[in-house]
Length: 261
Image 1 (cartoon, one colour):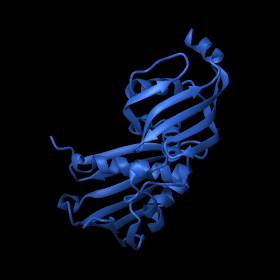
Image 2: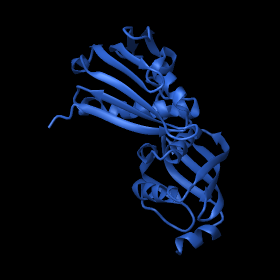
Image 3: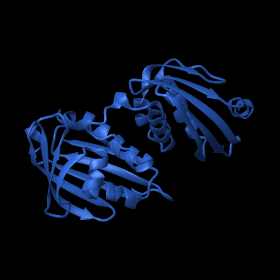
């Protein structure tokens, strides 16, 4: 069965006005999708997107700019995939607490399998642009990302509750060196992160360190009614754009009490 809609929602630690500007201005789109964007971002206007090193262009008509909650486009040109033509792309934006928002992208009228992998990449790029000020538009090769950028993107993904995006930054054969538990691979580890995040009220990144392209460390304060404040040093080994090893350093006394309940 053909599913003719792609839809994904990501929570982001950015105000809804920032999210709106990222999808309603030419400069915003350049920051997370492709740097090659020309045209006019206004109702009835047209955009043409190019992709470095590829003989491909996408043409979009701007249908709606409803600040700050909705932006819609209709595709009138795709030189490599004609199935795009006539399909519609909509961004739905909603406040989600102080300084936070939820961003939903819907692509209707096209086989989901044709667009899912690309949109997954660029939705995560949009989230990184909003939260870190550094999107990953086309042409920014993932393997060339320094370790600190990957570590930062991983941390921000799980902190905003997007555990799928966090998992995508972990190598399948991830190894870990953490107190209390042992994990066999990335799936077990992200399952534990998901459960632990449910105990937290908020997380602060206190420090970011990196003196090597393959190594990075974040120092975080994790606040919880269950155990107070836990300070964690999280060390990452990164190769080819994926986290290969994670090491945690922290006092285990507070967590032992939670685990033993």
